[in-house]
Image (tube, rainbow, N blue to C red; front, side, top):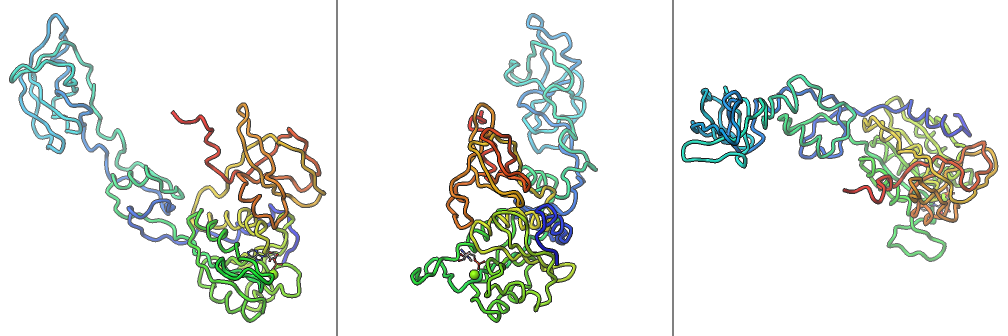
Amino acid sequence: MKTTLPAAEALGLILDAVAALPAETCATVDAFERVLAEPVISHRTLPPFDVSAMDGYAVRSADLAHATGARSVSLPVAFEMAAGAQPDRVLEPGAAARIFTGAPIPPGADAVVRQEDVVRDGDAVRFAASVPSGENVRPAGEDVRAGDAVLDAGARLGPAALGMLASLGRSHVAVRQRPRVAILSGGDELIEPDGDPTGGRIVSSNSYSIAAQCREVGAEPIYLGIARDTPGDLERMLRAGLSAHVLVSSAGVSVGDRDYVRPVLEKLGCELVFWGVSIKPGFPLVFGRFGERGPFVFGLPGNPVSAMVTFEEFVRPALKKLAGHAALFRPRVEAVLGEPLRKPAGRMHLVRVRLAWRDGDIVATPTGNQSSGVLRSMALAQGLLVFPADATALAKGASVSVQVLDEEFLAAPDAGL
Ligand code: AMP
Ligand code: MG
């Protein structure tokens, strides 16, 4: 087992170990935010034939070549084309067809004149201008042609993609399985939120934040509960999580007498890949695996911010890779530091920051007490500032790199219409 790794090396080991989960079939109606497991190739041409983009009259543009306000052209209305009609009637020269938006253009016609631009006169219609060929016609295949690659594997299925799949007649779609993540907390001091908080007990808040972090990437959290600080209880609970794709425990991974997570994992046959990453918060992170296909195990530190930050940096990209996402990481922005920062050389720090727009720049300011037990400064954080391992000081105004947690922040406040 490796120990005390630089953050990038630890992340590399994790991402080398995990691969996208197998595909499964999902009803398109239920596929919102799922990840496509294969490229979508269209078997259809859309629209399948030329259709009218307007309510009006289908014409042969040559018939109106000389129409002007002074010398208008009158054509008999030969028939009507409604949306859903078959394009089986030919528009003969010297005639027009009444047509509605979405109706097929009858063979022979090559343009549509808007009804606002004509004068209807009994069974005839009068045109006071010429019309270019193709005007107000949506050509067959304007949207998609049979054989086109429409969506790539790894795409996250958003509203437009689902509409696209439906329009291609795909009622079902191949998506990646969602990672199932078993979550447990360990500690004799821990209670559920409705428990009695006297006598040194604290609420196991980590299960709440970790479950939500799973949901944020489309993974399915399975809460196992609180294990007591005994090897037996921890083993019983870890075993219960082995049917999941990923097991995430928090606490009990340090060097205390009752930190049983590592020995119990080893007893269960887990190969421990590394322990300890040179970051703050979050040093005592454990990563292990049961064989090639998992389950994969993350033993997160117990402190609430350490647990959340190590999840962000290491578990989240792993879940995204398992889920088949093409993009694994948060957006990163360059920001201007709002107040000076210092630290000893050695570990990378991830500093909780608020973000604000100022004259087109993003200003990042620490959210307050950065102790790994202070969850409040995490709750206020819109980003994590990367304070590199070797650096010891960052001046106010320095250019810094920030991982953006609050992705909506990136839409500037005045970015609407
Ligand atoms: P440990 O890793 O067991 O030494 O725990 C480190 C710190 O995190 C201790 O102060 C614990 O009380 C706290 N802690 C451990 N587990 C949780 C949890 N599930 N929720 C909130 N705090 C926790
Ligand atoms: Mg403990």
